[in-house]
Length: 105
Length: 199
Ligand SMILES: [Zn+2]
Image (cartoon, rainbow over all chains, first blue to last red; front, side):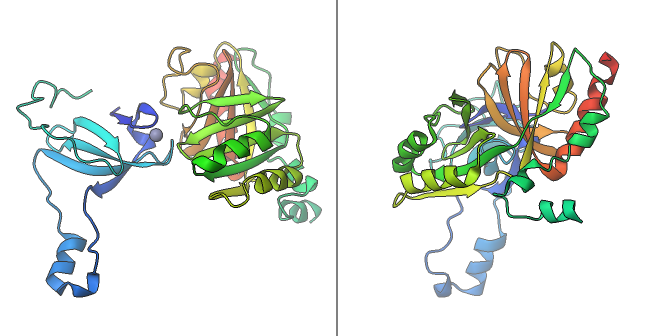
């Protein structure tokens, strides 16, 4: 079973969690000023990368909190987790942590 | 009809608290010393969420300082405060009348940002104890229940098969499960199934 490191509770099994979509997508401050295309872009279009992806997770059957994770979409390896509101950690390229990425726990 | 009336009665009446969906199952249950199953009695349960300023006064009014460490429970005077999230606790007072307790805590937190909800009748408690208690729980729960990883005094929301539970370790071989009452027979019967080979 995949183990996810909740920033509050520590390492816990994946069935306690729910996926929450891509992280760090800010709702436009003034939606009525946006064109339909811009609004659709905010609502529907995601980066969908092959590789490292910052995403929201919720420890729904645990502390209940949303937090963020950087996960490798190829290997499903969780590179790092961090609390909601914090910046995506820098320097997480595959070349930096290449040895562990793909080495699924 | 009387039974239905008491189930739908307001949460704070003694009648509602005393209706336990596990009593019939427990009466038909066989003793298994390796993993004993017992329904816990009625308790006042208050769900508290609050910002920093409210945490101290609420703990003081309840009589148990709210634990700040993740996944830990604190006990005093037969009451327990369970950390469920960084701003969320369940306050557990076995045998207590929830209404005066609610009033005392609510007035202690007056004016401070918080939410306090009486959830006494929402769930029921189950105690499982014995040398194979952790083994039986692990039939439906994926946590590492060794004493190193899940020590006495730890508590957490987690899952048992497909039901959400709050699991506490109150002694090395004794766990308490708090489960929403409509899921309680499901959890009880799967615990029974898990310990059948130990009979
Ligand atoms: Zn958590």
